[in-house]
Length: 347
Image (tube, rainbow, N blue to C red; front, top):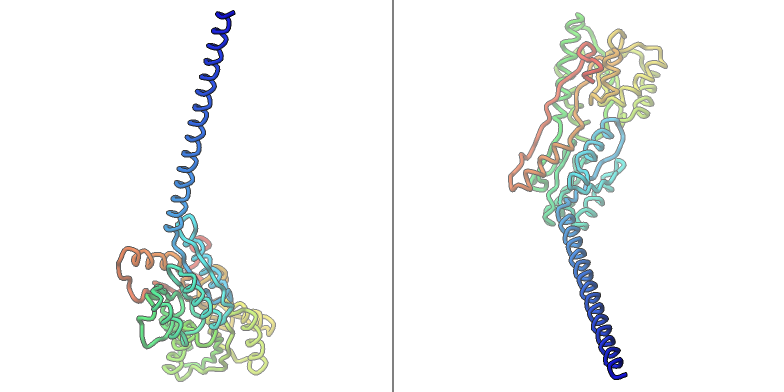
């Protein structure tokens, strides 16, 4: 019995020892799991924090979506400043309102974005809000249309087209075209459909035509109305013009959408236009639809205005990030298109 009791006691000690070892091993395993989980959480938090730090936030105030050109311009920005490329693009559609653009810029400043990009609806009235962005240390890049300020330190850089040069190209082409037709001395009646008033596109393209009118006494301005860069408004004003006069030799439209509206009005009035028509049709922007119409002979001349500014804005930002000073003004190289120059492949 004694031997048996000693054996049972020994077996009990062995079981307790095994139990303590199992408990200890389990505790060590659980502690290791907890430590691993904690380190994983810290690593994930660190990675998230690093990703947040690497993401560059761009505030973009777009003036609207009034035309095919504007839509392509917006798409260029969206395609460039993607999450995959390390950006967060905050875009605000101002719907042709300068007040909304000013409010958007102030909101971007409050949100402490890294950069602000402004496509201004008009040229004037920006000094106060641009000064606020500068004082907050937020670089502001003006894109497409221009701003007029006495102090150009209010914005970091501008990239876009020379709108006056575009108008001058159109006038030069018209001079040569009329000469080829033997009409250089003939009285030429011109209808001018302007874009949104006080925008740099309207001001530049109007200035180009005005210089042409001043240089040619036989060029007569039959009518000048604002088409707001839209097809609907251009159709409306052209329809009303044709109620007053049908003596129209040239229609100078400040963008493609206006040209489409003018075509509608001319069709209703039974007037032909384009390469084989009686009315010479000049347009600007060279959108896909505009170039297609030009290739088909419906538009005599389409002056290029390139909307793909996303990569150009990114280049400016990359220079700033590298500590470099970008050019204050960057002009886009552009050309003009006639029907004979165009193919589907080129478009």
